Length: 258
Image 1: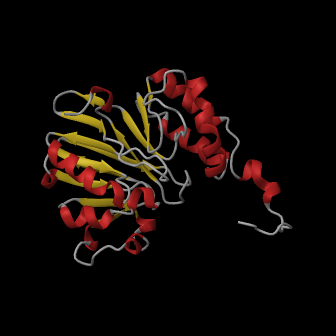
Image 2: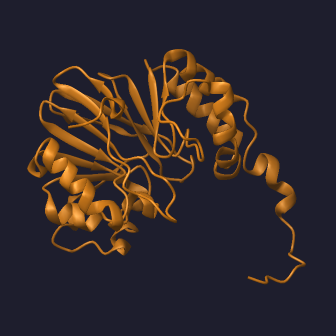
Image 3: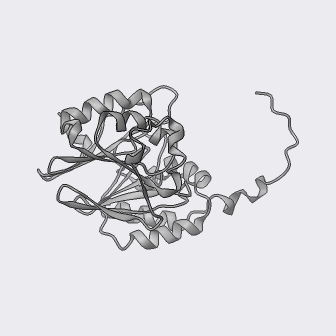
C-alpha cells in the first residue's frame, strides 16, 4: 500500500506516485516517479542496478509488470538509465528517450533482443497515450543535458521536470516555504545549467501549461500554483553556467594531489 505522502495525485482511475527511495549510501538521491492511468503505467527515470529489483517488485505489486507500458528516460545519466537492460528484459515496456541518446544508451549493456524497444523522441517532443490519457513529452534541452525531455500530465497537472528543480540536502518531500527552499536548489542550477538564456526560453514555454506541481528527479516536490510561479520567476532571473563561470577558463597552475 502506497503511503499518502507518496501519492501526489489520485482520482481513482489516475494516480501519480512517488515510489519508495531505495537509493542510499554514496549515490546521489534520486526520485523515481510513476504514472498510472486505467491500469497502465509509465515509470520515469528508474535509475541503476541497486534499486532495480526493489522498484520492479513495487511496480509488480501496484499494477503487475505486464501493465508497464513505458519507461521514460529524461536524459542519458546513469542515475536514470543504468538498469535499462533489466527493465526491458523483464517487462514488455517501451523505453522513450531523446533521439540524441539512442546510440549511447546501448553502452549500458542493452541486449540485442530488446534494443529495438528503445524509441527516440525528436527534439520537438511528442504526445503519447497512457490508458485514456495523453501525456505530453516536452523539450527540456540543455537542462542539463543537450538532449533532455520532460513529461507533462494534464490530468494531475504535474510537470515531471527531470533535473530542473532538483534540490539536495533538504529533509522534506514537499516544499512549504519556497524562499527557504532556494538554498537547496541554487548550487545545482548555477553549476549544471549552461546559460540563463535556456531558462528564459523554457519558462516562456511552460507558462502556457496549467501546472499545479513540479516533480523533479532529485529532492523535494513543488506543489501549489503560488510556489510553481515563484519557481518560474526564480529561474527567469537566475544567472548560471557560462554567465558566471567565464573566469574558470584558464590553464591550470596547480598539480592535482588526490
